[in-house]
Amino acid sequence: MNVFIGYIFLGLSLSAPIGPINAAQLDKGIRGGFLHAWLVGLGAISADIIYMLLVYFGVIHLLDAPFVRAFLWLFGFFVLVYTGVESIKSAGMITASEMRDSEASLAKSYLAGFLMSLFNPLSILFWLGIYGSILAKAVSEYPLQQLLIYSGAIILGILLWDVCMAAASSVFRKLLTARVLKAISVLSGLSLVAFGFYFGVQAVRMLFFH
Image (cartoon, rainbow, N blue to C red; front, side):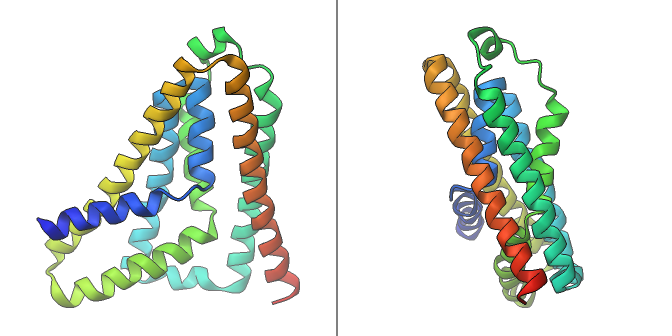
């Protein structure tokens, strides 16, 4: 049980650092409430599970090819910059009525989180490094059933963090004024654009200076 709880805390600590997903969750939560923010996180977790499976089956090494990684950096750049710019452009349109009744599609929120995580090369490096090392250790010590339980504990930790982020953003939405919410939305958008440009720089370095 102690090991299980340890892996839950590992999942929590992996999700806590501020990154594109947290910024997107905050923005979606302010606009659409708890469910939209949570679905961004759920989309990201779906991509994480795909990477966990790729690590488990050893396929992820194919994604380590420079051309493939450059493509992922580039696609991540477009996804993040587009999402960030849209967030900044629509920040001025946040009104009391929009905050009470968002018409945004739930599927769109899920897809945004999924694409951000799926085309994030840092996810590949992260799951290869962290989960790969856990897997290497666990395979030699635990049976498959236990390995699946511990993998589930990591996912559970990430889910718990997503619920916390979604709850926090929906509380902001109810307590803060429209002007403050607009400022947070712009900052979230700028954060996404900054992450996007970081991805773009990495893509250029990979393509032309590697």
